Length: 277
Ligand code: SAH
Image (tube, rainbow, N blue to C red; front, side, top):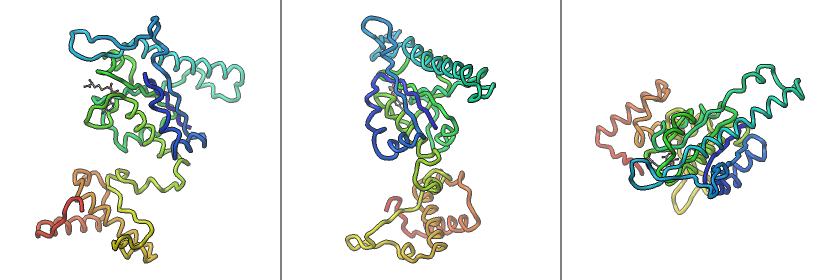
């Protein structure tokens, strides 16, 4: 079971993506739990103010540190107490170790200044059983949240969004599909793009002829070895055409290397290979 604790000023932004399709099923299957916490509930003043003007002037608002610290610390300490109480009540359920040392989950700040989120990072996060995500808004959060509360910082790409909620959902979605039992077919993620630094081969489904465009014959042949070879070739070809920067990280066989050499020759010989046909 993977548990995400999401801290946000806009909890309802998280709702609908968790209520559809695979994320919904993962929750129903008990593989995923997403607990959304409203940072505003932890603002202690009368008007529940969570943002303020930036020191030094300039435009925009900055999220205040106190409610963010209070929210995250409250939720994490609550869990610790619940766990140690559980231990005294029902010792058989816990190892003695867990009573004395309950490790803190990673506390991830979503920020365009964080390390880039990739499939490798998703795989790394999928090894945890609990992850805390902090969503910023406005100009971002007070720097002390980054320095003294967060243990990790993730960016979903080199662009700036209005808040960390969509990035949080991106992380939750990518991690969840890697959890055992979430996708119907356990092998389904193995061929996915970026799993082995290669883009995936193209997919076709019925009809075999759509507006005169036919499915590659080999896919209809029933010859699995041939299909596998074709898919590998397509995968290499696509990566070579679209994302050659990925290839140095791929694990390539001798046959793979020969194919890539052939592609290089073809293009040097002026045979057209448009990038996005
Ligand atoms: N002024 C900030 C950006 C603030 S954007 C800066 O230049 O660094 C407001 C919030 O949206 C951020 O605090 C962050 O939580 C979220 N956000 C925006 N773009 C993001 C991205 N690419 N990845 C992750 N979070 C992002």
